Image (cartoon, rainbow, N blue to C red; front, side, top):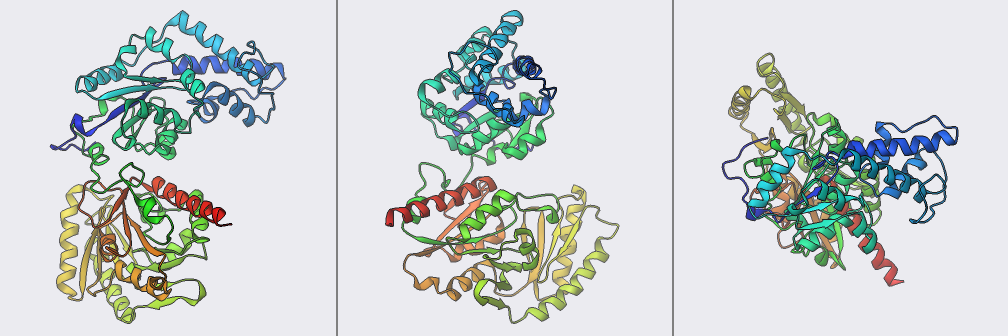
Length: 525
């Protein structure tokens, strides 16, 4: 991880919230052993040899409340079983009986072998507490209190929210964020200024759904990719690799220069209440995560469904540096407006169309520049990728050797000397060559807004969401007219009004707006 001489200080973090099994204590293997013994016995009794495996544990059981784990596993085998009652005797007659059987076996194993801790995790926890940071332990297990007492770490937490407390207070289990949010409430801290440490898929999902500032996946069991895919912001396999006060990447999650949309200080939903927003969206880093190769930025099915629902209720335009046809192929929704190449060409439903008057001249220049760049970089800058767009050329150096980056920048400068009608734009590990014309995403947004006569509707409000330097033009033109929301704000200056942490929060923002619209519609009937 990157180092930063101006790292975080203890005052920048409200709280650290830890899952127990697999994060602080080595009881995950004990849980897994108890689950396998109990479930395999149940399956054998029914003549089924499709026994529990590692994937089953990670996908259906790990991190969930006990009875939810039973239900989830049985559903994977298409087995129906009465839920029963939590007082059911351990056995195979109900979901609760089977869960209780697992618990009896787990307790026997703990009494026999004790509860071991991960020393490096406890050492860091003690160090961070000495800095005055509040801490909590959160677990779906009803055995949490017993385990932390046996492990000798009970005094390291200001708050404990476990399976017993969750049942008493009617809190939903992971992947719902209830128990994490309850811990934050008891600690009297803000989720967006707190860190969650989790080793389970359901746990990192819960941390993201609670809009916590940083969700750290603890990948001790070769599950790094799965944790990242399901919501972990970063992953560690050892707490000694987590430098809370000296890591630039970690610090970035707590240096937002504008209010977070999902925070107490945000009034974005109050502003949009009673309005009919028109959404203008960047693509890379906003609707899809940034990837190593631009052609791999595939839209998820979940985001596509959300965009479709959003566009059925509101105007939705994608305004991107990509070619219009490329982003249309990625999104595959006909009821959206697409504005490509920073707005040089736009099309949408009902015959909406605009093409910049200097299009042909620009394309001819870009053809020549593309050829020059290929000649300059061939065999001299391994890993550099030339991404030709219709009206611009993006030179990506994310995969280039660090020593070659100055050469890349210098060669782009030579293009500016040769072609006087070009200018550069900078992004994340990319430099772009584009026409030196007074046209940008902001002007494209205004053109679409006015072409649809939305500026004549008193309840309409434009909202632009983007993550890159090129999106600042749109944020600036909407000042006093609408809202700008910056994704992945890492302390930079911006003309945006609010911040969202990542693509996941972008999708959750859309879902919240859809829900507000639908509830308002029901109220009008």
